[in-house]
Length: 171
Image 1 (cartoon, rainbow, N blue to C red):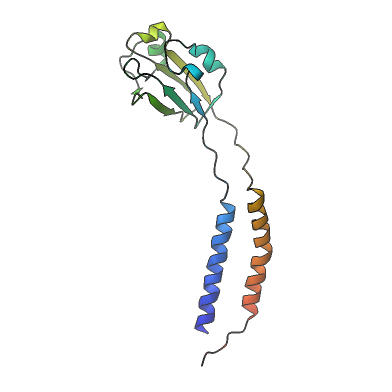
Image 2: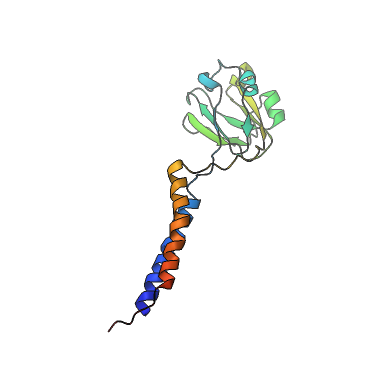
């Protein structure tokens, strides 16, 4: 009798685990990656105003700065410092190795400059970040859908069959 209930518990655990796996197969979406300056990257030869007006920035997106670290840097600043190319009192220095990312975590305008005099030559960009409407939940692949549909039919049959079995006493 005890063996029967142990097997039933194992089957129930297996069923619940399978159902959880099937309902979580679709991965949540990640933010978009925007290479700052497009093909040019973060250099003094890009038009950042034009580049940023052709991009749509949403909360959760990432800015990808590609640049020569020996020549340039990337500083997040406030609007006043952005307008005057003032690197004093910057918000954050995101310069690490010349291939640096920055996540846009809230809906607001972010301002970035390159210090070392390059800001005056146009190495500065601002991005307006908006809250994106929720994306539709991706549906599982055809195989996963088929497996999920099949499991919804077969698993209850298995449970019903197991419950209808009469436990036998082992001698």
